[in-house]
Length: 161
Ligand code: THU
Image (tube, rainbow, N blue to C red):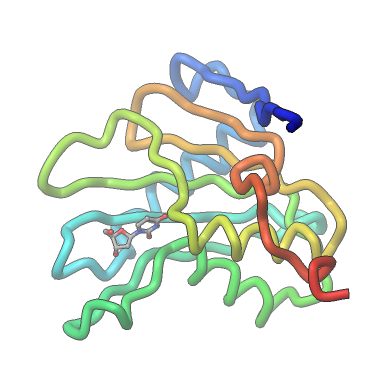
């Protein structure tokens, strides 16, 4: 028998003012864009915004549906948009924010499992780490250095070789 440990390092900042200028600007945009979410069922607005390697900005918000499972998370709206409008450009950084219209929005929340898988696919496609910034409308900010760290024991194209 052998035992292994999985761990990773991430950063926690007290607030947005501790970020470098580039990350700060991206998170500010993510926060501002939460109001574009379509959330008549959950009232939970999520915004994901990407800084591409060529400096372009692409954004996405969650889009819900009366048939609940049809709804799409902000992260996957973003990744589908990127793959449609900037298909040959790698993503440098993604900032994810949310505004809970029914509660507080001051602590970072992390992407759901399905979105982690989608983020990993994007990262693997360009063989380049995607920095992920997580924060609510104010308060702490968490930075994770790549998508792979968020998904231990992941399934990827390599498993099908
Ligand atoms: N949601 C996201 O947009 N991203 C996530 O990673 C978690 C959840 C959305 C889906 C749904 O519209 C609302 O948040 C409540 O689950």
